[in-house]
Structure formats: structure tokens, C-alpha cells
Amino acid sequence: MREFWQQQGLRETLLTAVDRFRQQYPWQGQRPLAAPRYHYYGREIIEAAVTAMLAGENLLLTGPKATGKNVLAENLAAAFGRPDWNVSFHINMDAAYLIGTDTFRQGAVEFRPGPVYACAESGGFGVLDEINMARNEALAVLHSLLDFRRILDVPGYGRLRIHPAARFIATMNHGYAGTRELNEALASRFVILQLPVLDGDGVERLLAAEFPRLMTPGRRQFAALFLDLQQKCEHAQISSKAVDLRGLLDALRLIELGLSVRQALAMGLVNKCFDAEERELVEDTIALRIAGSMTAAELFD
Ligand SMILES: Nc1ncnc2c1ncn2[C@@H]1O[C@H](COP(=O)(O)OP(=O)(O)OP(=O)(O)O)[C@@H](O)[C@H]1O
Ligand SMILES: [Mg+2]
Image 1: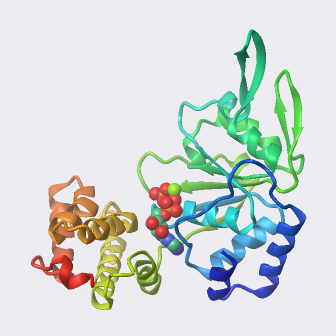
Image 2: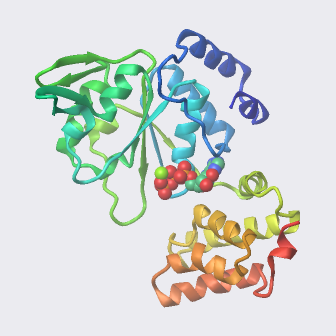
């Protein structure tokens, strides 16, 4: 990660500070360190996020879908040399799920730690994924964990002091139906970064890294297509459903494996729209950039 961040132009002082953190808290536990599959692109955002981690802050990453929130969180854990614990928040989750519960083992009651407890105890990087999806009652147990107290109260077992290397990174997707706002008390415990949608250069770099066999013209075309969709969305001609970087990468993966370009783009992008009229608009946008007759052989070498 260090090398990649250096290429991205991250300030040397930050890189050395991360090195110092790693020396101060070498990971010796059983759990494997985070090994991210993707790199997050965006120097300014990385610098801000690294600074927040160094300062011991909790970090909330917000932004539209597929803006790399989880990628960035994983990258941070890897860079700081800590394992990550991913906790997916949902409407039915309760405090016991986060902290842990009593279980019976060989006739005796035993505490089985939940992911937040385990992470806090061993000094991991906890990713509180889609934190706004849980009910406020379930979230209240996090208050003392996430403020200056840095403790976790476990009813019946006392309190856990959080390992000094532990960090919590929450993610939250705003802007689509079904998402809720984060309550103020919780939001106040985080510093917040809004992740931007990748620009054209960023998309091209991502495509180059992800598809080494994709030739330059194809890379440009697909990046341009993504920007077209983004623009249509900004002008309210289509919804954000088809503005989906994840779907674009999926489509290219299918094409590389031999599926027709049209079918792959339908599966990755077009069919995300359930409204026939919108689907047609997305198809038209695609047709302007990518010929229906295009084959994998023209795209990949
Ligand atoms: N700035 C970026 N740098 C690197 N990859 C990016 C970036 N933005 C988006 N991506 C790509 O988008 C895809 C989705 O990333 P990720 O799962 O982290 O998104 P997310 O913001 O968590 O999305 P969601 O809100 O839908 O959960 C990945 O393939 C990732 O590589
Ligand atoms: Mg995510």
C-alpha cells in the first residue's frame, strides 16, 4: 500500500507517520491482516482519511454507491497494518449482536464476543458498514465506544477498554431509497468524508489496473460511457441506478470471458433500471459510445 500511496503523491510526512504507527503497534494476532483487492484512487481523500486515523478519530465515509467507501476502509486497515472487522448493519440487528452474547459451552455460560468487541479488544480496524441502516436503539451501545471514553460496556461482564490501535470507520450510502439519516448523536462522534464519484481519469486508471488486457481505445470508450451516464443523471434524465461503476466493471469482466458486449452491458448496467423508458435511455447512451457489433477481440488483446 505504501508504494501505491507514494505513486499517488501522498505527503511523505504522512507515510512516515503511518510507518511509525506500524512500528508502535505491530500486529501479532492470529487474524490475517487486511489484503485489499482494489486500490482506492484519490490522493486528497486518502490524505484526509490517513490524517483522521493518525489522530485517532472515527471516520464516517459517505457518498453514492460504488464510490469506493469499502475499498478505502480496507486500504486504510492494510496500510496501518491492522486486521479489519466488517460489520454489516441492518434493521434487525441489536446491541448483543455487536458486542456479544452469553452462550452455553460444556454446561457453562460463556461470553462469546461479537465483532465490535473483538475488534476493540485486539486493536483492529472496524468497518461499520451501512451504519445508518440499523435502528437507533441498537446504535446507542456504540456511544461510549466512539467518544473520548473509548470503552465498551458489556452488561454482566464489566467494561472493555479499547486497544489504542483500534479505529472505527463507518460507511453510509446516501441518495437512494431505503437509506436513512444517521442520528445526530452518532454523527457527532465521527469526522466525515464525502467520497466523490471518480472522474474520467480515475475511471481510466481503475480500468487499466483491473483489466490489463483492455486496450487503450476500449478503456477510453468505457470511461467516457460512465461519464455520459453520470452526466445524464446530473441532468435528471436518468436516475442513478445505471450510474454504477461496479456494474461497469462487471460488464467488462463478462465481455472478457466472451459474453456479447450488448448482453454484458445489459446485465451490468441497463437492467439495473426497472423502468422500461429509462432502460431505453440508458441503451441509447450506450449505443452512442459503443457499437452493438463490437466484440471482445476488438477490446482485449
Ligand atoms: N475512488 C475509487 N478508487 C478505486 N476504486 C473505486 C473508486 N470509486 C469506486 N471504485 C470501484 O467501485 C467499486 C465499488 O467499491 P466499494 O464497494 O468500495 O463501493 P462503496 O462506496 O462501498 O459502494 P456501496 O455504497 O454500494 O456499498 C469497486 O470495484 C471499486 O474499485
Ligand atoms: Mg459499500
